[in-house]
Length: 272
Image (tube, rainbow, N blue to C red; front, side, top):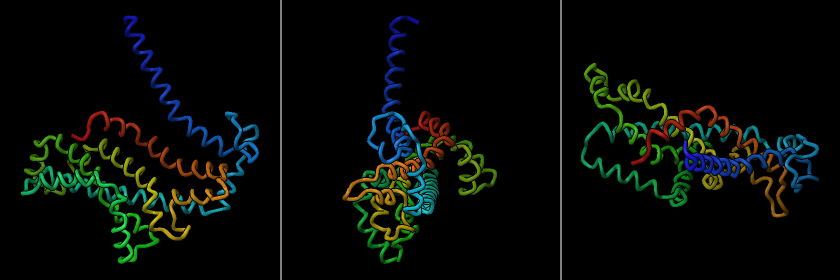
């Protein structure tokens, strides 16, 4: 290895280390702040001199944080399953069947991805009101049951699937749905894992729609619950960081479980 190559390799690693530090340090600061007593909240020390769990106890006493986390998990999991299911069926239809307007349908789905949810939030709210879905988890899930992003990624993954395998399954007597579930889906584990984790994170972090729809704290989700510690008089940083740490744990665990599949999917596929 030449000197220039060593310098370039060292520079690349130095940049990655710096970027990793910038990404991880806020997370570290959140966690260590959650263990600080009130008199050390604004200290610049890298670790509290007397770590305490009082902030976590106070969070548990101030609000039903366990119930809120459960609501958020149920909502995010249901939204993810709905988006993956509708994405699979829509992508399979666009790839497998040739029908008039197929290209137009694909283009409209791609264009709908560019429309922010805030644009259709008010019409969805009016519809949810008429259907009696206010202040319910079903009202959070149903308007987000389909996602253009899931359709486009799975469409791209299915286009690269060998047509010979699909034709062989058809010749063996498998119907379209059976071919999708028993032949195609088992070979799309990496794209499905990446879509699942991205949809789950998006649903978990959703703020505007729950803020508009939910009324009672016991039916709330974690992004709304965090507001409980932000008031006009000031923010209770210790409790806020403790609640934020609890809210981050499920996402971190999910990523650790599916990390290999997500990285593999991003390396092998993309939206074209």
